[in-house]
Length: 131
Image 1 (tube, rainbow, N blue to C red):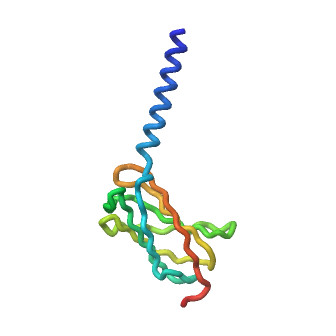
Image 2 (cartoon, helix red, strand yellow):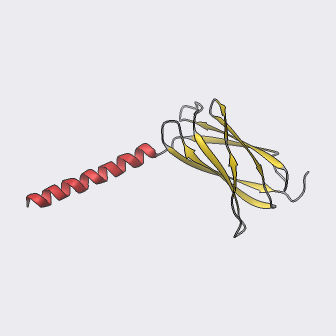
Image 3 (tube, rainbow, N blue to C red):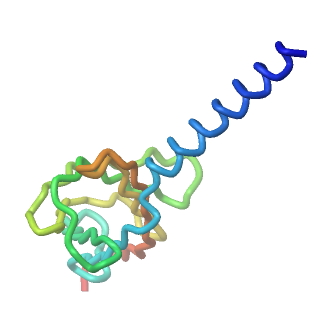
């Protein structure tokens, strides 16, 4: 009887730790604003991707360690990775050269300065020729 009560308490404690860890690691309250220049990139031209991370009060989140990957909707394409530079005040920048026309998904992942993990994405269309 005592071992069953102890087992129940251990299981409850482990579940609580998992829930607390998941809550602490969440970055659901973080907003992101994307800009891409040119707005409609073309194949074999460099696009500048800027994004701003903000908390629920609209304040920029500085000091995040982030990566950017571009995923082509075409099966079998290897994602294109790009270095992300912290420009201050919650603004980050990356440069990408996308190799194929069509729909791409840009995915930013990483860790905020407070240790929470973040993953956000946006879609971008790439033209075959420059405008």
